[in-house]
Image (cartoon, rainbow, N blue to C red):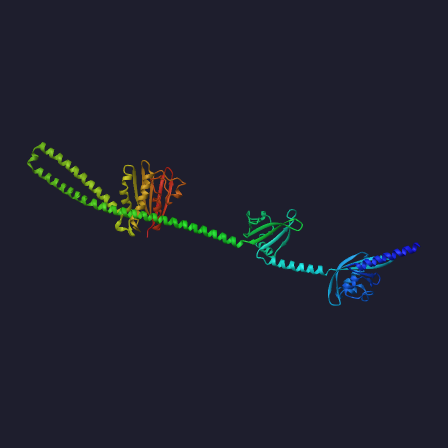
Amino acid sequence: MSTNNEIEKLRESEERYRTMIEMACDAIFVVDAESGSVCEVNQSGLIMTGLAIEEIVGRPVWELFPEDERDRGRELFDTAVREERGRRTSMHFVRPDGGRVTLDVTTALMRLSGRKIVVQVCRDATERDEFERQQARLSQYYERLLDSLPVGLGIRAAINATPKIEFENQTLKRMFDTAACKGSGITWDACRADMDEQPRIAITDDGSYAEERRLANGQTFLYTISYVRDLLDQWCEVTIVQDFTRRRQLEDDLEQVNRTLEARVQERTRELEEKQTQLAQAEKMASLGSLVAGVAHEINTPLGALTSNNDLFIRAIVRLKKLLDTSEVTSDAAMKERFDRILDSIDEVTSVNKTAGERIKNIVNSLRSFARLDRSEKDRVDIRDGLESTLTLVSHELKNRVEVVRRYGDIPPINCFPNQINQVFMNLLVNASHAIKDKGVITIRTALEGGWVVVEISDTGSGIPKDVLPKIFDPGFTTKGSGVGTGLGLSIVHQIIQDHGGKILVTSKPGEGTTFRIELPAR
């Protein structure tokens, strides 16, 4: 009775086993471990292979696979038997209608009723395989799409832990392959410490931020960085990189051009201001020349009359003296002495008148010579004459206070604008006079040195401070205070000498004096 119960239970167990196999969605093949032949197959196996049961049972299990996979099927079976453990791989069935079914195949060795069998479970993975292929195609499509972008795109994952690069497109790789070739040696995700300079950072409207990074080799990149959470709720960093090297170069070039243009504009403005100053000064000199000519003409007319009358008066006194010597009036000693005193007084007055007239005449001639209205074009002149004319005009600045020492060497006449050169002498002599606070000496030296006519005007005045010396020829610079000097005198002097192809140099020692050296071409 006990044996019958056990047999019944075994039968019921086998029935449940067969029922489970038949109801399974996966294809299940029971294979003899010795021969490899299929002993049983469920309904799903028949549907999946498209074969009848008699076409499967008794057939080696590996022959159910396509010819190109049968060796792998045999190896899978042998390994399961040999190692007595499950094995899993991907295989295919080819249906009679030509349909190809992708399988996940699991093979395992089992013992049933004292004999070894191999159970091979085949799950249809066609849809999954097709889905994975679609996913792969989509991934490839999007990767190509991202690779075709004109900007670099990189993604770093796990930025809160150990950041790692999850994606970088080909444009980004090419950018930094080029950067490496140019000697930068850094990667796109390098930290700021690798930069040649601190990046310029700006927050964008969408909450991301942009920064410009410039490498040591001059390459410049614009980084736009934003943060998103991935499927695991971890923060990822999405970086868009644009190569701004060319743009930065153009900006730098434009900035340099702007600086150059600004410098040129400033230089041109300074030149125009100098020319305007010279023009104004020339107009003043022209007006002064006209005034001097008019004054000289007005003075010459009465001066000529005075001179003529004084000569006539002197001759009359001489004749009167002769008459008195022969006259009876002179026989009276007292009367003669009285007449002699009167005549001596008259002689003294006429002598003074003559000296004053000559003085006025010299001043008028010096004024005319200084203005040189009849010589406003270039002329060949002896500049020592100009020095003497100028000294006459500034004598009121020097009289009884400054001694003028002349050390004139032999020099040839030079081609110049005489009125402009006289203006130079006038400015330098007046400045020298003002530098001498009490009494002092002005020394004027002329010489011919190696094809240059040299004029040196030295004074024993207060001198020029060292920090001021480089600025004395700048337009508008003056040390005389507001309302005293315009700051144009030495600027005009410098420009006139330059226009004549010459040079003007200055040396000075505070407390000892100053020397201006003018060099003009002798040709």
